[in-house]
Amino acid sequence: MSDENHPICSAKGCRAAAVWVLAWNNPKLHTPERRKTWLACEEHREHLSQFLGVRGFLKDVVTLAAWESRETGDTAEGTP
Image 1 (cartoon, rainbow, N blue to C red):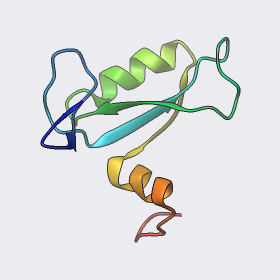
Image 2 (cartoon, one colour):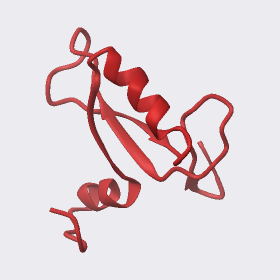
Image 3 (cartoon, one colour):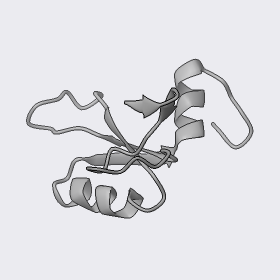
């Protein structure tokens, strides 16, 4: 999953550090509130977003830091 406990990009073969979280769901398989996630580095964010987007799966793209703040309930600077 990651090197030294740092999340890495979900793109095939990429070992770069993840910077983005792409939240998605497949409406044929998942309830509307369910969110699956892919992680993306700067280089692969657009490609992975397009892949999910053309299928109608992409729901949200946020920085990894913002996603982690949501998960822990922190209201860090710049995070709702």
